[in-house]
Length: 338
Ligand SMILES: [Ca+2]
Image (cartoon, rainbow, N blue to C red; front, side):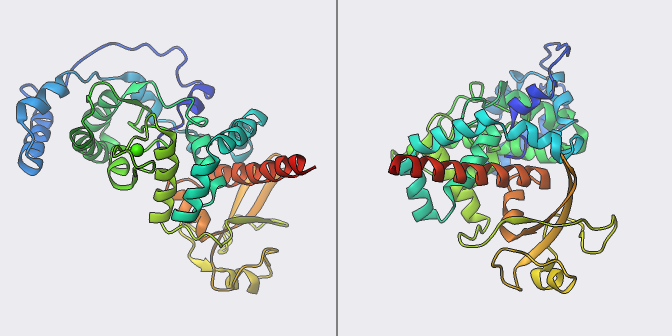
């Protein structure tokens, strides 16, 4: 989710040659912003001031985290390079194995939550390679560093730090033990603390919401995130159209949310091949693929994928991986029928 993809960061070389000095600057008696945070947690959520302050004192400021947040791949890569990172043969093989291993859970997520197993698996594949890389950073360090020492997003990350304290209190976690991405995203689906608290579910019914070590809860939670963001099970996601549009065309709308409909694109001569209603929200995007510019018409469900990570390249990768996992599953099914 949003700031996951530790392994992508490794591939992109974010960690090469970066020195890291250990400092523990989040001392409430020395910094007014830390003191204000502690005060707020006590007043609004009834935390013991000393308890919050003591954990914050153990938070380490990380230059590596500050370096990572300043250059996410979504902003620096074109689609052809981004695609090469996520759409690899081993990524598909591992995804098919993950789908097969958790067949019953994926089937239940489709039935109960109405979200395609291939989309859920693709999200977990893109985020953590199906749980292989969930992030090396202590969440406490990540959120304190970004909440107090990353001015462009400090409000956001300080809120997530607050959510993190609420989460560990609710779940009985040790605040210093949980690890995640450089931005404090945790578990198979890389949920930031606010998402963990609001969208993660106990999908195996054992009374614990564990998306860190329990793939059943993780699969259910990713599906639940999509359901809550209004995934529509029987509607299309995106399709490539022939040709391209000139840069600056009014049909290449701004913002991730589709502001036109399929009818608008049909009227302009851009007809989808898929059976899709005129009223379907639509947004044309143009990306740089291996063979040059590609024109895609994206629909409501594509927009829902961007609710997981606010990037059309991210949604392109999830859509493409899901499509290949579905094709691979169908091929494996027909092999076994023979
Ligand atoms: Ca559970």
